[in-house]
Image 1 (cartoon, rainbow, N blue to C red):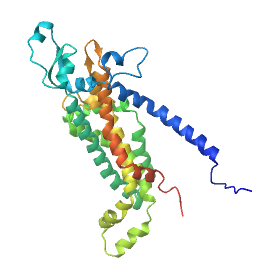
Image 2 (cartoon, one colour; image 1 turned 90 degrees about the horizontal axis):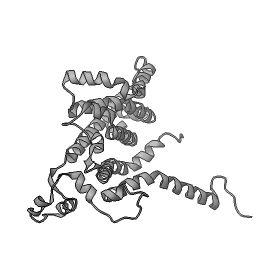
Image 3 (cartoon, rainbow, N blue to C red; image 1 turned 135 degrees about the vertical axis):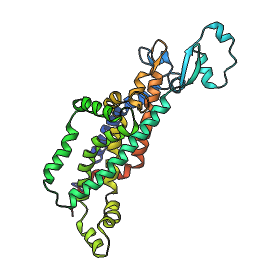
Length: 313
């Protein structure tokens, strides 16, 4: 008689689970794959019906994303010199010439500065606040924690007008500092709640031993608590960055030029005769890369952080 294990799944169960996981992954990734493929289509292929799955790849969308162009007539085109690079050759095929770089690079850089800046500030302040709530006797601790979390439940549109008026009075409209402070204020509630849970799981005896050895409270926090809370900090940083990176409502309302981020800029990419969908898809693909790379680099911490404290001894 073959041995039977309660915890070990059968081969059939493993096969069914593998098929379900594959189907779920395929359905989840299909929109992403479609966006990436659209970035390598030409304008007519991107709007063809029925949609083209097999097509001739082109980098026209990426060229249009990073350049500004204008249409020329046949007479002016005859006087032009031969294309100096592949980008000009692609644009000439559409009876256009490049007039300069687009603003996508500036908007993408704004997203990097504001997204990572607000994430760092949220983690820095959230870690200190979470440690205080976890280790010290704070009056009305539970009420304060609920109040902090309630700020996250509020829809952005409910406070959009007051924030707009406040930013205009303080001179923070369309500034990097203003957007960093705003996203930090929104993210810090999530950071405090998540990090407090992680710090609660770290035994107090470690810090007490460090204090007995002569460490100050800050030294014990920096050398004992922070290394053990690294998984929680990494997990929280990913969630904070995703919000700041993808945020759209406040970016549309409070920025228009200097500090405008990529999300409100990408939908405004207009081509000749309508929306330039390959350029929009190319911008969305490039916009995905930083968060994707950041998440991949911290994926081990993310998996450990999700299950941290799930198994108790």
